[in-house]
Length: 200
Image (cartoon, rainbow, N blue to C red):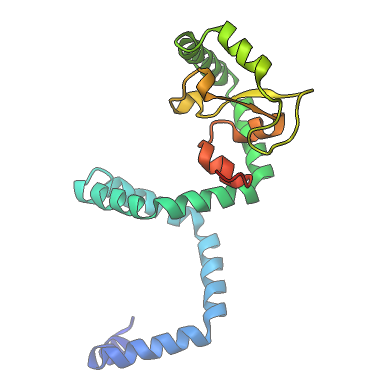
C-alpha cells in the first residue's frame, strides 16, 4: 500500500474497506485467476516460506495448543472430507500406493513380518481353531454387510478389526463376501456399515 492509499485508508477505514469489498466482488474471478497464476509461478518460494514459518513455531506450546484445538474442532469435517477425497481419487491413490510399495520393498517386507507376528499373538489368545471351525460350519453363508449369498466364496471377517483392538473370537466374527471384506479392511465397522447402507 503506497503513502497516498495509506492516508486515504487512515482517514476513513470503514469507507476504504467498503471500496475494497466492492472492488473484490466486481472482479472476483479475475483476482482468483491472477492469484492462481501467482501461486503456480512462485510455488517453491511459497513452500519454502511456509516451511520456515512452521520451523519457527512448531515447538511453541501456544502454537501446539491452538493447532490441537483446531484439529479437534474440525475432526468430523476432516473425516468426511478425507472419505470423499479417497472416493473421488481412488485410482490415483491406488497408483501412488503401488509405486510407494515398489520403491520401499524392503520396508514393506519388515512391516508384513511384524504384522503377521502381532496377528499370531492376538489369535493365540482368542478362541480355539476347533471352536472357530464349528462356528464357520454352522454360520449362514450370507454376507453380514451387504446380505449377498456367498456360500461358494466367502471370507471370515473380524467385525472389530484386530488392528483396532478386536478379538479373535467367535463373538467378533462375521461371514463376508470377498468384496465387502476387502473394502472394509481395517475400517470402523459402524462407518463401513453406513457406507454400504446397512442399518442396525
